[in-house]
Image 1 (cartoon, rainbow, N blue to C red):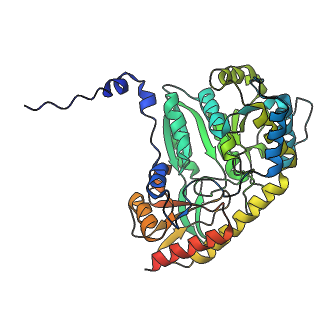
Image 2 (image 1 turned 30 degrees about the vertical axis):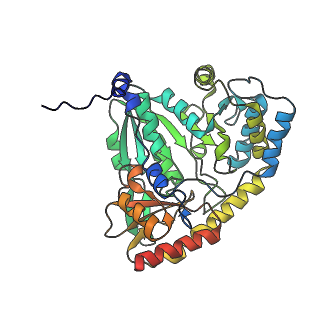
Image 3 (image 1 turned 180 degrees about the vertical axis):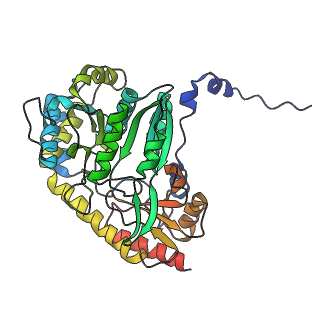
Length: 407
């Protein structure tokens, strides 16, 4: 009898921790790899804009390097960084800074290596082995990935997608959320404005989620990184608008989107100051801090980056309009006009396998989109399109998609 071939590498997988092995592969990367380098392809699959970081931000980092700021730095972040993010948050969210005792005191902010690092810290504080955490889906797959490698179980609660008088819309199904809470639930992960749907929670929805968390003693892990990409006001509704100082909310944030700093890997965690030593220890044992020259660039973004944020939002709004205008009249397409973020989540009637559909669109339409299955329950029938690019490019992508649908 033929014996299966011996694989000497398999023993390493057998010896690794199951939560590490369980970390899911990205369905977005699969399509990215398939279409990467195609001549004339419009790559709209990744959540990244096409503008480089503003020069004044880059120059701040250059000055720091020139000044020799290349040594170890405080684990929680340089005091200048923490004060700058507190100033920015107070300016945007309207809560007065109060010398270390207010909602936006520097003690609440911790420099991280991007938003993903902030999210991992928040998850490890809130949930671990044997715990459950609720994730409102469709959602950025990294939420579930971070929970998996921490040993926690992801409980997906899909948003509702329904046609209303003003068109298709995503909304919170609060009854489903409430029913998902069990004795093992430790946290609710909420991303608003949402990647990938563009759903943006109303103040009433935020109050309802917060009330549920209070009633069960749960953490809320809040990802509000697209809060400035909001199309009905200066910023989206936030848990900051409804929370009390003693609420268990951890905010994961990043400079990647607003200030086009994806490659800088610069972000921050906002948390109750009582967790300061815990977070410092966790940073010590994960990254040992964020380079100071990176923090100098971030400080410049916080203090002098508003014009760039406004430019980014205006370009995204123009791209959003081009998509809605061109695709809105097609019977085979269903989508909700994004209330926030810079993503459109669209469904093609009659196309159930969006993984295969994403490959076809690369080949047949010259447009690269991310398959919705990668975003969890409720996303299987959809494709994600990132419109944080030149509005003319987005208009061309919309024309290509429309032509493909009509053909």
